[in-house]
Image (cartoon, rainbow, N blue to C red; front, side, top):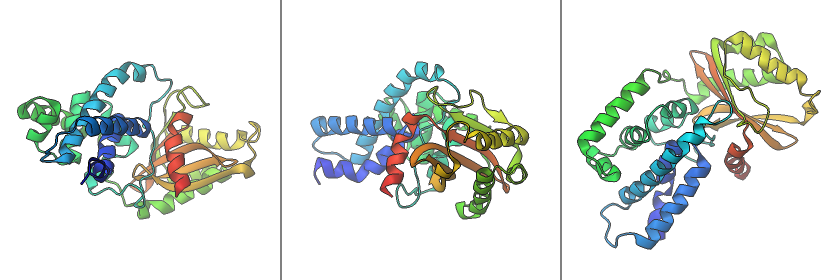
Length: 298
């Protein structure tokens, strides 16, 4: 196989590592481009494992980006959410439950609580099944240190890890009811599908209208959603120009909202115990380019 063949054969897995590390599909693509340049110009002639070698390059590039991005994240306007990606079987099939869970927005936000090194070790071990010795080589540390980093990360995440979820097919009728209720501005129906302690986050990045703080509680979230529906015409948005489709985004069902054909926001729902427990809305235009391209291709 040529260098390009080796790289392309591992591209999907490499993207999976980079995306989970960075929370950004756009940055993950940039990392893969840098990784390819390094691999094509200085890759060893005889590789025991091209995948492990390429994963090492990608992981180190991601660690560099994460460390430099910390200050930028702290200055972010409003709630920060990962850049959403379409994840249905026709695009990025997940091969294990750990991989499927680790790509949800809720879980990726939790990963932000870890140090870059803890994040790398946790993902490489728990999600991508690398051995501690392999991870130690990638991070230029010891297997013992990797074990410590992993257990520390796992303990921290376990405190807040989302509970077991139903299948997407089981969740779809509830999400369809939510779409109808949102479209009609029905307080009663919205109340019936939302959990009492539902959370609502909006990522506008300071570039579009968005709530600067998370909202918690059914009453507050219903009032906000009904308000959006009622004020749309006054804001110059004719309701007939609004379309809402349900797509699989980051392993969960999401409302993809377009105004006059232009992607305006992605509402990712979390369903637990027969109710919507969280809604994470990405409206930052910079974070919609990648998924818009994905969905347009479909």
